[in-house]
Amino acid sequence: MSRILFLTFCLAPLLGYTQSDFVKLKSWKAKKTESISVDRLGNFIFIEKSGRMRKYDTEGKNIATSSAQKITLVEPWFQPTIFVYTRDQKQYNLFDRNFESSTTHTLDPAWAIEPILVCPTHDNRLWILDQADWSLKKVLPASNQVIQEFNLPAENFENANFTYLREYLNLIFLLDKNSGILILNHLGNVIEQIQVPGLAGFYFFGDELYFVQDGKLKYFNLLTSQWREHLLPANTIQAIITDERLITLGTNKLATLYKYTIE
Image (cartoon, rainbow, N blue to C red; front, side):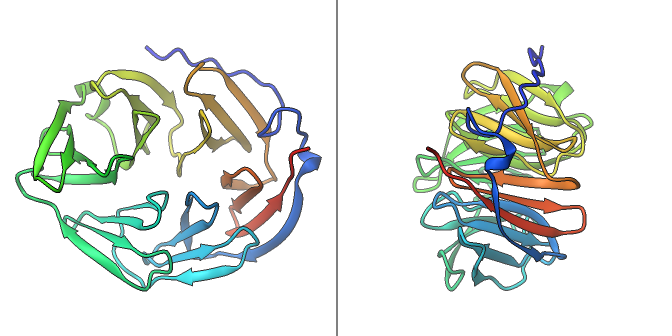
């Protein structure tokens, strides 16, 4: 049972901040962008419908662009490479930071029959969501071993449309576009369900998971289960915050970059 309680604090992303502390740096049209992400260095990745990825630095400068390709899941935090999974080919690629070269890896059929989502882990393993039996498997590619496996409860997959898989703070996160965010521990137990149908994506800031809903950036503390939130510019549909920057993507596909400082 979810123990979520929405608390309206009207706080900025860091305690003690107000919205006026954000200073606009620049805006640009990103009309082909479907989703955005961020790497460990604070660079932003814009993922287009064609599968083309555009990388922007902390000043909003486009520093690298990939070719168009089929993409199911992008995970740029896997520094120094960018992890890209393609479901149709059952392959994942590890791109260098400028998209100039990559290595391709094909999933072993023994790992999963229908691997709809795959993501890297902090210890160089893979998590695989197998639609054939709705199991999550942790795999060690170097030895072809499935080192952990459990099945999702039926109520969590019967009407689901899973689009994203991520490991963080020793937890597993699944994005279901029909219902929201499912959080499991490494034993396969569901510890939280956050109801946000139609969510485009979610991200992490320290101990918090956050996402955009109803014009606000909402943060859920993974250690204390507490919530906080703050307003975003009108018509924002996606947003990412780092320790110095906030980037937003609006309904008109206008990207806007802001800065802030800690005093």
